Image (cartoon, rainbow, N blue to C red; front, side, top):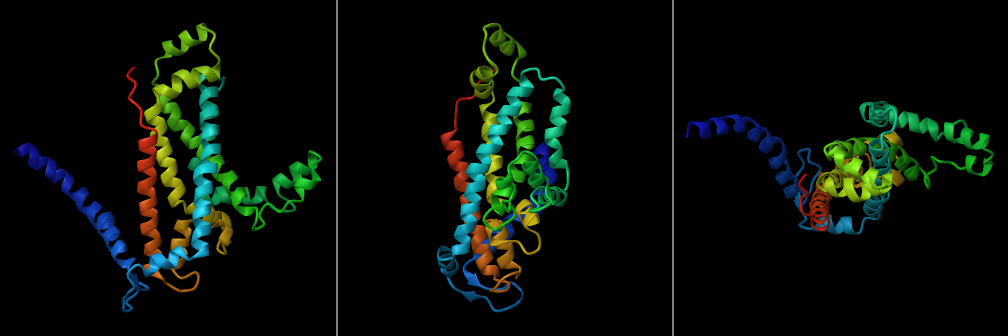
Length: 294
């Protein structure tokens, strides 16, 4: 009995903060999504599913969902492709393993604004690093492409996002791979298995639970991403860089007409919440495997 009271006493402050700053605001946001309101003291007007109907007809919102899907699937494919390649290289006894780990993780410890400033300089139309590199390689056609033009800026941003994310997820996957018994790798090498075969037949099945966790983390990040595209686009961010979370912020805090449409913004938040839950449930269902003991 005393032990139970101690557990409750220790959990109570954390639970109070969790309920007060997460659960209750989430419930209130769901409630506000059925109203037309700015959230700044005006009279809230009940519109029912009107905000959701407006979202369905909103071409900008559909563009944000398209961008989110591109980040989730295309960006995810490149991110995890690089993460798997890096894992194979680092598990194969690559010289300077610790240094390489530090280098690929380094973008994650640098401020997002600094990273986006660097990538903006890389893609600068006339004097950028990429433009000059392509000129030196004798590719003037590619060098003349306006990488930050509206039709290209989203994919330019994705390159930077993949560059940052690949190192982070490589470290997570390596943390799981490092727990695989070394004698299993040695036995495979003695049998003549290649680096790719070792990764596919030993490492990947043994760390499948880690892979699932990283995929869930990536899905959550892709659905709610704000800071990198927003910082990449700057104060006058182009609609080509909008994600649902950025659109939520812009609609809720008045950077575009209608000003301070908090009810509309919370409807976007509710849709994102449902998308996140559905994506996580789908990943866990499709990628569920029996745990491998070792």
